[in-house]
Amino acid sequence: MGQPLCAIAVTEPDTGSDVAAMRLKATKCEGGWILDGAKTWCTMAGKAGLLLVLARSNPDSSLGHKGLSMFLVEKDSYDGHDFEYRQPLGGVLTGRAIATIGYRGMHSYEVFFDHVFVPDDNLVGGPEGEGKGFYFTMAGFAGGRIQTAARAIGVMQAAFEKAVSYSQERKAFGKLIGDFQRTRVKLARMATLLTVSRQFTYAVGRLMDQGKGQMEASMVKLFTCRTAEWLTREAMQIHGGMGYAEETPVSRYFLDARVLSIFEGAEETLALKVIARSLIDAV
Image (cartoon, rainbow, N blue to C red):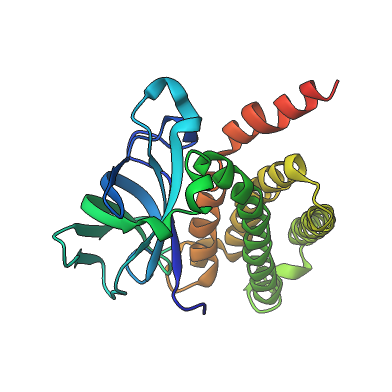
């Protein structure tokens, strides 16, 4: 694990995919900036020793995304579901974990900034980086989307392996459920879509290594994350009633897969604002 662990603080309570509408304030002061406002869905914010925070450094709302800057906020690392970090100069940074139905091994937090001081040196990009936070964020999103696709593949692989092994253990009507044609058709489709997702992700990864593939990163995320929902559901079906029991790993895989189509760009936003727009602009 990297030291310090870094968490991303971009999303706000009333602003998610519309990054240009962010409102957390960064006010210039002697030697740095003062941050005031709230962020949400900040994954690993408690454990992290560093927050990468997108804030509005220019109060002129007409500037839109051009009024945003990126800051590095240093803090102590905390275990548990709540934290309160007090700066020597009086700033307070507090956080509270959000209760979720899945992804419980990696908590996301609501984070509140109350007069939190950030030195000038922690403005990403230095003085020239002021007003460029939106562009830094967009550049990072493509990487976030390809790694989310990779996460989806990991969940699918685990669910598929459990489905195959269970089909060779559980008996119904006098024979293994893996011997029924319907089960075999399910497994064949699962294996096919898992392979397609993996190869699609590798192909986009190679494009991104060449400095390309920004739109394709959104495509592969949209496809693999929706596929992960379907595949983990099928794994649960093969397990029957046991698939719904918390003691069975596939129940967790199903719940963990559900969020993948939401974070790092909801599938609807990716389709409308990234993929379709890129395709039309290319005509």
